[in-house]
Length: 250
Image (cartoon, rainbow, N blue to C red):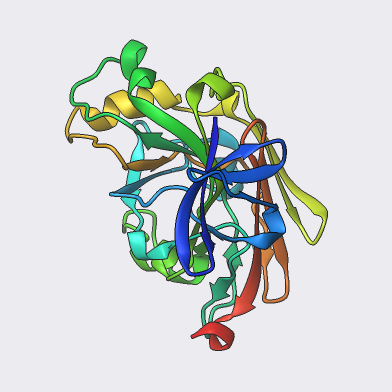
Protein backbone atom coordinates (compact mmCIF):
# COMPACT_ATOMS: atom_id res chain seq x y z
CA UNK A 1 0.00 0.00 0.00
CA UNK A 2 1.14 3.53 -0.81
CA UNK A 3 -0.30 6.23 1.43
CA UNK A 4 -0.11 10.01 1.12
CA UNK A 5 -1.19 12.94 3.28
CA UNK A 6 -2.65 15.67 1.10
CA UNK A 7 -4.45 18.97 1.50
CA UNK A 8 -7.40 19.74 -0.77
CA UNK A 9 -9.75 22.70 -0.39
CA UNK A 10 -8.46 23.42 3.10
CA UNK A 11 -8.90 19.86 4.40
CA UNK A 12 -6.23 17.26 5.13
CA UNK A 13 -6.81 13.73 3.86
CA UNK A 14 -4.98 10.43 3.99
CA UNK A 15 -5.15 9.01 0.49
CA UNK A 16 -4.12 5.75 -1.12
CA UNK A 17 -2.35 5.75 -4.45
CA UNK A 18 -4.41 3.61 -6.82
CA UNK A 19 -3.85 3.59 -10.60
CA UNK A 20 -1.95 6.90 -10.51
CA UNK A 21 -4.75 8.61 -8.59
CA UNK A 22 -5.03 9.66 -4.96
CA UNK A 23 -8.14 8.06 -3.43
CA UNK A 24 -9.36 9.35 -0.07
CA UNK A 25 -11.31 7.45 2.59
CA UNK A 26 -14.55 9.03 1.32
CA UNK A 27 -13.74 7.74 -2.19
CA UNK A 28 -12.85 11.09 -3.72
CA UNK A 29 -10.24 10.81 -6.45
CA UNK A 30 -7.57 13.38 -7.26
CA UNK A 31 -4.81 13.61 -9.82
CA UNK A 32 -1.37 14.27 -8.38
CA UNK A 33 -1.32 17.85 -9.67
CA UNK A 34 -4.63 18.70 -7.98
CA UNK A 35 -3.39 18.43 -4.41
CA UNK A 36 -0.95 20.00 -1.99
CA UNK A 37 1.39 17.27 -0.80
CA UNK A 38 2.18 17.02 2.91
CA UNK A 39 4.77 14.82 4.55
CA UNK A 40 3.21 11.32 4.64
CA UNK A 41 3.81 11.06 8.39
CA UNK A 42 3.77 13.56 11.24
CA UNK A 43 6.89 12.40 13.07
CA UNK A 44 7.04 11.99 16.81
CA UNK A 45 10.86 12.00 16.74
CA UNK A 46 13.33 12.18 13.85
CA UNK A 47 16.54 10.30 14.55
CA UNK A 48 19.34 10.54 12.00
CA UNK A 49 22.47 8.50 11.38
CA UNK A 50 25.62 10.23 10.19
CA UNK A 51 28.35 8.54 8.14
CA UNK A 52 26.39 5.31 7.68
CA UNK A 53 27.91 4.70 4.25
CA UNK A 54 31.66 4.21 4.01
CA UNK A 55 31.82 6.14 0.75
CA UNK A 56 30.13 9.16 2.29
CA UNK A 57 32.56 9.16 5.22
CA UNK A 58 35.46 8.95 2.75
CA UNK A 59 34.25 11.88 0.64
CA UNK A 60 34.19 14.01 3.80
CA UNK A 61 37.69 12.86 4.74
CA UNK A 62 36.43 11.02 7.84
CA UNK A 63 36.90 7.49 9.12
CA UNK A 64 33.94 5.17 9.45
CA UNK A 65 32.73 5.34 13.06
CA UNK A 66 32.98 2.30 15.30
CA UNK A 67 29.32 2.63 16.30
CA UNK A 68 26.28 4.47 14.93
CA UNK A 69 26.63 8.26 15.06
CA UNK A 70 23.27 9.76 15.92
CA UNK A 71 21.58 13.15 15.81
CA UNK A 72 18.04 14.45 16.21
CA UNK A 73 16.42 16.54 13.52
CA UNK A 74 13.61 18.85 14.73
CA UNK A 75 10.07 18.08 13.64
CA UNK A 76 9.80 21.75 12.66
CA UNK A 77 12.16 20.97 9.77
CA UNK A 78 9.64 18.62 8.11
CA UNK A 79 8.06 19.55 4.80
CA UNK A 80 6.46 17.65 1.96
CA UNK A 81 6.89 16.69 -1.67
CA UNK A 82 7.16 19.70 -4.02
CA UNK A 83 7.47 22.15 -1.10
CA UNK A 84 10.36 24.63 -1.23
CA UNK A 85 13.53 24.12 0.78
CA UNK A 86 14.73 27.50 2.05
CA UNK A 87 18.39 28.33 1.54
CA UNK A 88 19.51 30.25 4.66
CA UNK A 89 20.62 33.84 4.38
CA UNK A 90 24.41 34.06 4.46
CA UNK A 91 24.96 30.34 3.75
CA UNK A 92 27.37 29.24 1.03
CA UNK A 93 27.46 25.41 1.11
CA UNK A 94 24.21 23.46 1.39
CA UNK A 95 23.56 20.04 -0.09
CA UNK A 96 20.97 17.26 -0.42
CA UNK A 97 21.23 13.89 1.34
CA UNK A 98 18.85 11.28 -0.10
CA UNK A 99 18.02 8.61 2.48
CA UNK A 100 15.63 5.78 3.25
CA UNK A 101 13.40 6.92 6.10
CA UNK A 102 12.03 4.17 8.33
CA UNK A 103 8.72 4.83 10.10
CA UNK A 104 8.11 2.89 13.31
CA UNK A 105 4.62 1.44 13.72
CA UNK A 106 4.77 -0.32 17.08
CA UNK A 107 6.47 0.59 20.34
CA UNK A 108 9.64 -1.42 20.86
CA UNK A 109 12.45 -1.66 23.40
CA UNK A 110 15.41 -4.02 23.42
CA UNK A 111 14.40 -5.77 20.20
CA UNK A 112 16.79 -8.13 18.47
CA UNK A 113 17.83 -7.30 14.94
CA UNK A 114 16.20 -10.45 13.53
CA UNK A 115 12.80 -9.19 14.73
CA UNK A 116 13.36 -5.46 14.21
CA UNK A 117 11.53 -5.11 10.89
CA UNK A 118 8.34 -6.42 12.52
CA UNK A 119 8.00 -3.01 14.16
CA UNK A 120 8.15 -1.00 10.93
CA UNK A 121 5.02 0.74 9.65
CA UNK A 122 6.58 1.63 6.34
CA UNK A 123 9.26 3.50 4.43
CA UNK A 124 9.50 6.84 2.72
CA UNK A 125 12.16 9.08 1.20
CA UNK A 126 13.95 11.73 3.22
CA UNK A 127 16.17 14.55 2.03
CA UNK A 128 18.34 15.29 5.06
CA UNK A 129 19.20 18.73 3.72
CA UNK A 130 22.37 20.04 5.35
CA UNK A 131 24.21 23.34 5.48
CA UNK A 132 27.90 22.65 5.99
CA UNK A 133 28.59 26.27 6.90
CA UNK A 134 27.44 25.33 10.40
CA UNK A 135 29.38 22.09 10.92
CA UNK A 136 32.52 23.15 12.77
CA UNK A 137 33.75 19.75 13.92
CA UNK A 138 32.57 16.15 13.87
CA UNK A 139 32.12 15.94 17.64
CA UNK A 140 29.43 18.61 17.89
CA UNK A 141 25.88 17.52 17.01
CA UNK A 142 24.94 19.35 13.78
CA UNK A 143 21.70 20.82 15.15
CA UNK A 144 21.86 24.11 13.29
CA UNK A 145 23.30 22.60 10.11
CA UNK A 146 20.39 20.18 9.78
CA UNK A 147 17.67 21.92 11.75
CA UNK A 148 16.41 24.86 9.71
CA UNK A 149 12.72 24.97 8.84
CA UNK A 150 12.15 22.98 5.61
CA UNK A 151 15.42 20.99 5.96
CA UNK A 152 13.64 17.61 6.15
CA UNK A 153 11.47 16.92 3.11
CA UNK A 154 9.65 13.59 3.46
CA UNK A 155 7.58 11.77 0.86
CA UNK A 156 5.93 11.65 -1.47
CA UNK A 157 4.23 8.58 0.06
CA UNK A 158 4.57 6.05 2.85
CA UNK A 159 5.08 2.58 1.38
CA UNK A 160 4.15 -0.42 3.51
CA UNK A 161 6.70 -3.21 4.09
CA UNK A 162 4.81 -5.75 1.97
CA UNK A 163 5.43 -3.59 -1.12
CA UNK A 164 9.06 -2.85 -0.28
CA UNK A 165 10.28 -6.32 0.58
CA UNK A 166 13.91 -6.31 1.68
CA UNK A 167 14.83 -2.67 2.46
CA UNK A 168 18.49 -3.56 2.03
CA UNK A 169 17.98 -3.98 -1.72
CA UNK A 170 17.00 -0.47 -2.79
CA UNK A 171 18.82 1.72 -5.31
CA UNK A 172 19.23 5.43 -4.49
CA UNK A 173 19.76 8.30 -6.92
CA UNK A 174 19.69 12.07 -6.73
CA UNK A 175 19.32 14.49 -9.62
CA UNK A 176 19.71 18.26 -9.55
CA UNK A 177 18.06 20.10 -12.45
CA UNK A 178 17.88 16.75 -14.23
CA UNK A 179 21.62 16.04 -13.82
CA UNK A 180 22.53 12.79 -12.03
CA UNK A 181 24.60 13.70 -8.96
CA UNK A 182 24.35 10.73 -6.58
CA UNK A 183 24.03 6.97 -6.89
CA UNK A 184 24.03 4.40 -4.12
CA UNK A 185 22.40 1.29 -2.76
CA UNK A 186 21.13 0.32 0.67
CA UNK A 187 23.17 -2.89 0.61
CA UNK A 188 26.18 -0.62 1.23
CA UNK A 189 24.83 0.66 4.55
CA UNK A 190 27.42 0.22 7.29
CA UNK A 191 24.67 -0.59 9.79
CA UNK A 192 21.62 -2.32 8.33
CA UNK A 193 18.13 -1.07 9.01
CA UNK A 194 17.52 -4.02 11.35
CA UNK A 195 20.73 -3.27 13.23
CA UNK A 196 19.83 0.42 13.52
CA UNK A 197 16.43 -0.34 15.05
CA UNK A 198 17.97 -2.85 17.46
CA UNK A 199 20.69 -0.38 18.47
CA UNK A 200 18.28 2.50 19.08
CA UNK A 201 15.85 0.33 21.00
CA UNK A 202 18.67 -0.85 23.26
CA UNK A 203 18.61 2.50 25.08
CA UNK A 204 15.38 4.25 24.09
CA UNK A 205 11.80 3.23 23.47
CA UNK A 206 10.85 3.64 19.84
CA UNK A 207 7.18 4.51 19.40
CA UNK A 208 4.70 4.81 16.53
CA UNK A 209 5.54 7.83 14.43
CA UNK A 210 9.26 7.81 15.13
CA UNK A 211 11.21 8.30 11.91
CA UNK A 212 14.76 7.04 11.41
CA UNK A 213 16.94 8.56 8.70
CA UNK A 214 19.38 5.83 7.73
CA UNK A 215 22.18 7.83 6.09
CA UNK A 216 23.16 8.97 2.60
CA UNK A 217 25.59 7.44 0.09
CA UNK A 218 28.56 9.34 -1.31
CA UNK A 219 27.89 11.83 -4.10
CA UNK A 220 26.78 14.93 -2.22
CA UNK A 221 27.29 18.24 -4.01
CA UNK A 222 26.22 21.85 -3.44
CA UNK A 223 22.85 23.19 -4.49
CA UNK A 224 21.72 26.80 -4.74
CA UNK A 225 18.50 28.80 -4.95
CA UNK A 226 16.84 28.08 -8.27
CA UNK A 227 17.87 24.41 -8.28
CA UNK A 228 15.41 21.51 -8.15
CA UNK A 229 16.33 18.32 -6.26
CA UNK A 230 14.93 14.92 -7.23
CA UNK A 231 15.56 12.26 -4.58
CA UNK A 232 14.64 8.81 -5.91
CA UNK A 233 14.65 5.47 -4.11
CA UNK A 234 13.64 2.22 -5.73
CA UNK A 235 10.07 1.16 -4.80
CA UNK A 236 9.53 4.38 -2.82
CA UNK A 237 9.18 6.93 -5.63
CA UNK A 238 10.69 10.36 -6.27
CA UNK A 239 10.73 13.23 -3.78
CA UNK A 240 11.01 16.58 -5.58
CA UNK A 241 11.79 19.91 -3.91
CA UNK A 242 12.91 23.27 -5.29
CA UNK A 243 15.53 25.33 -3.47
CA UNK A 244 14.57 28.96 -2.82
CA UNK A 245 16.18 31.90 -1.07
CA UNK A 246 15.11 32.16 2.53
CA UNK A 247 14.00 35.74 1.86
CA UNK A 248 11.44 34.48 -0.64
CA UNK A 249 9.51 32.45 1.97
CA UNK A 250 10.53 33.91 5.34
